[in-house]
Length: 279
Image 1 (cartoon, rainbow, N blue to C red):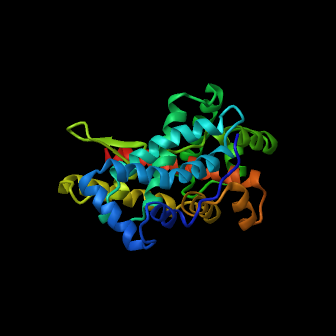
Image 2: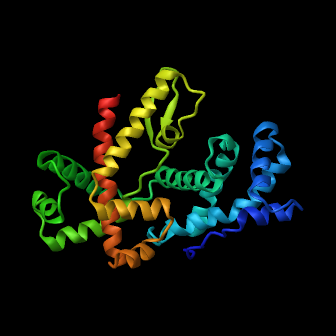
Image 3: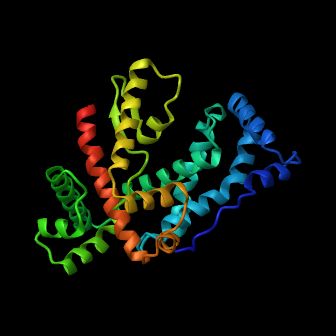
């Protein structure tokens, strides 16, 4: 498995320089607008070369949370499809930086492929589902985030056995931002990523439904314990590794992994219940 690779903040300028273009933000925006209108193959190839390091960065970040059976090179291969998808679907008028958009698409493509090959052992997946169900029902009854002690007691586990279980399921706590939320009348699959983008071309009914989904996601995140919420922000938005997050929060990397797992399981339970109401 390969090591985590830091992104090159000069990626945009380097790509422009390689084509003999001025190294300015305006030039980058202009190139994206030109590609959006013309779909010039040469521009597409240039973008692929320019942002290829981003795939390695995301793959490296995911690799450190995976078991040794998952190869870093495979993750890179999966991520390439996400980069191609991001380049083809990026809309420069959305006022979102391409890197931000591409990281989400690359991560989603890797997670989707991991799911398709079912890399998580069935026993671990079943344990994760039981834990998710327990947390969801317990927190609904308590009306607050459940503590480790409360979850362990609910499952009839000692503290030691509970910690072992958390370590066991930590690798299975992947939530792809490309998860399908609902399917419209015309078999239009809408994902979390799409709901966050909220394209202006959608009809008013779909826009209203996606606004409701964004509200539900925001509400679910706001209800997480502060430390878990901070870990999600640092991991998914600030692109820190679990080890780096541990240094920021002054806890061990394994503790960060457990808190990340709990945050994902809490979020899954809340969103699953909300999705039933939306659908």
